[in-house]
Length: 420
Image (spheres, rainbow, N blue to C red):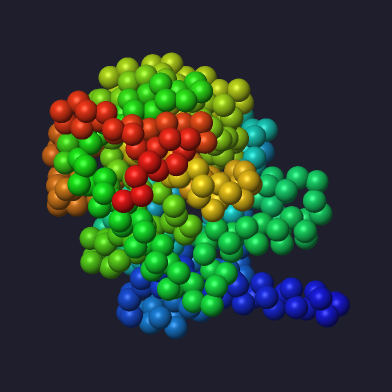
């Protein structure tokens, strides 16, 4: 190993420790005595161990990590009986839900191969996803409702790096992807925790501006897009740091550039076209275009992954309705990188986006204390899925519509009109 190689390794280890510190202190806000449940791909082992160390340094009582193996996933599709694709380990997800109810924090490390299941039978992929979604619902409802503090971070893995930097040797691609993750996660300076505090303050100013406006709807105009998204009754905008139901302040996404709220499940109309590919459960779905009527997708098409898209939309009644709308400036650091990450955590923070499926009750005033019927009455969508896909770009204009029907410019060419 050369002196240069040694220096690069030490620099990466230092930044890995900073990312782990941000994950625990900023992402989770982990409290002394709190348990942590973490999920991670096998290739993310160095980051998972760094986070484990930082969690124990922060006073965690116990850290339990569940690792996923992509080869094992492919072996299932190669050898498992057909009936196996309608089954999922409900006991595992019930255990995770029980941990969250008991106060455990949740951390997910992403880094999956975005095309892992591209060559597999779309029907089996859809059945497996549906079975997992049903089994995971008790845990998903607690996460979507911010019952506990949780966060998502990413690790550079060879398969993911190959997708982002095709043609590069694995070692080079992984190193470049780590550089991109570190930059997007705001850990490059001397004090990344302070940098995150300043960034959260900026996002808070934006949410305060939008909450004061109380828009009835948002209107989007651009190539292939003419869409009106009605907002849920008593909706609230959130972004950056948020207070979970257990009173712990956390950042659910590392990185994050969005401000988001809950649309009304019955008040979405028009046509919208995706501006970036959607990597979903091992399939890349490109050039999505859908048409909404009375909140529901009635027509859908895509250039690739159409069979998987159709299966997703048929997951349940709520899968064809929106559960989230988010605004992101086109000049965000992730957008400026010019990279397509094939990873929703990053790509959604490069562009404004919408999400099909489950709504966040946190985004309704008093929503965390509401029952299911009250949430639906306010316009919240309920579903087994929550899938973000990008609709923003430098060619998109967004307007806010007031309760009196006044239309005000919010974004032009993908940028905020008001800097309040």
